[in-house]
Image 1: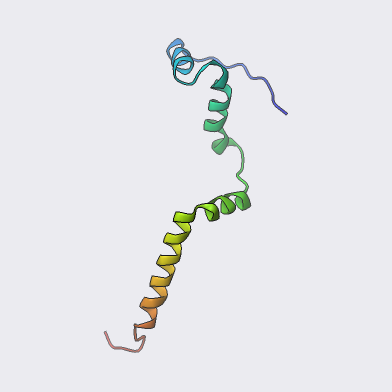
Image 2 (image 1 turned 45 degrees about the horizontal axis):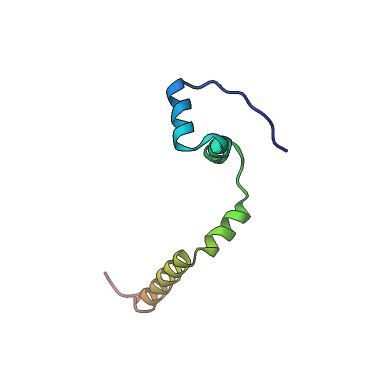
Amino acid sequence: MNRKLTITISEAVYDGLHRTIGRRRISQFIEKLARPHVVPQDIEASYREMAADQAREQEALEWSEGVIADSCFTDPHASQ
C-alpha cells in the first residue's frame, strides 16, 4: 500500500529534482534513498543478491582456496 506524503523543500532542490530526476520519478527516487535508512533489510534477500554476483563469488572462491593452500604449506610446529 502506498501513502501520500507532503514535504517541504527549498525551491533550488525542487527545481533540481524536476530537472535531474523528472517529474514522475521523484517519489521513487526519494524512496530508494530513504529505504535503507528506515526499513529493516531482509538479510536472506541480501545474501541471495550477493550470491547472484558471479564476479564477487569467483573472487571469494579464489580467496578461500588461497587461504586453504597457504595453510597446507605452513608447518604449525615450526619455530619462529
